[in-house]
Image (cartoon, rainbow, N blue to C red; front, side, top):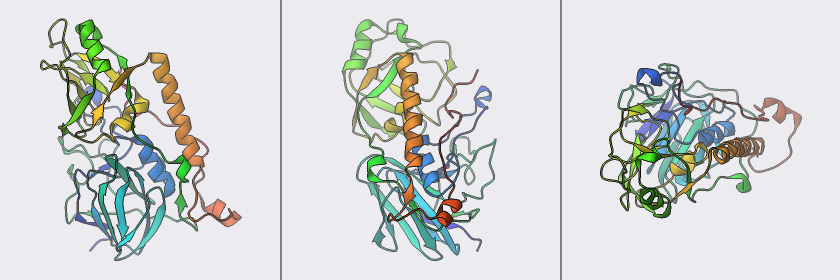
Length: 344
């Protein structure tokens, strides 16, 4: 058998995701990519990878994996999934070394919905259109374009490792919750004033019809001013459509690239990660902000991510000796294209 991580149980909705598939939306191909790029970056930072490298995205219930290589280093970032190694509990935001035969299992998270498991050196999977991200509806990326399944073997590239695994201090670990900020438009003129007030003042429940493509919300109907059909136009990550029934539909990473329902608002990029952690049955409230505030929030989010990556330290504390520092992939900032930037 080839070396890698063997999938004993896939969990629910477990896929391979990286920073996304860039430059193909004009051809009708979804960008895909991690639902929370910042958590992907933190998981990769913990094992010394580039921040956008492909990792395992898990949701609701995680997988069970067996190490089929001599050794590898892993780290989880995101929702606090129950996590164990050979029956012993592990902590998120801390890297661990596995050896051949070790069994790594994930249950359900105590809160939140999604997390990312990174492996030092990354996965030895051939990119499709410049990305390993899995888009299941078109069978692109990952392993045959499918979610992970029992019996799959994830081949690893391997990596030279620093002398000690890394951890993220508790004070730097992200939390979830709070209102989701939106910028109204681009078709908010297709709704009545009462409809917009309803959207911004009422709570909406995430239904079971939620996945990486989008999430359907239930709550008070939002009234249209001029029907619910428009000429199809582009959709970005976080576009909020309102079909004829009047309930919001938020389009996410695996969305289609155009659509013909009017869009009342767009979730700001800084809040897409928190949105990805909302569980079915939980309530979402929206707060409108201006474009300038949304841009400030995006800059703040990038700054916070840079601070968290810079705060990574050896697990268990201790001093930073020269040998350790020279072995580390030290990070003093993050510069990356937004995988959800709308195309011209």
